[in-house]
Image (cartoon, rainbow, N blue to C red; front, side, top):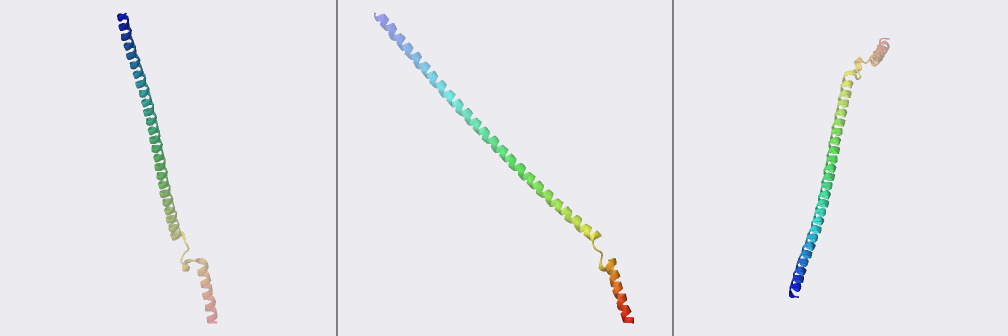
Length: 120
């Protein structure tokens, strides 16, 4: 009877140790799974935030570069138009009063009339 009691006692201890080991393994596995899931979620969130920030910064940089290029092109176009207008006016603008045909004729005519009146 003592031998059966000893074997039962030892078997109970072994079963208890096995149960404790299995429970520890399950708890550790659950903790590892939770940690892995949290790490994966954090990494995904960080990657998404970084990608969104990089894309946002890239979009802002592209918009700024395009704005600067457009501003420079507009300034250059306006400068070229002003230079062309100034050169055109200086080259093909109104002639001096002496060289303007109609006014020179009128002045000449007036001078002739005054000369006619003065000589008569």
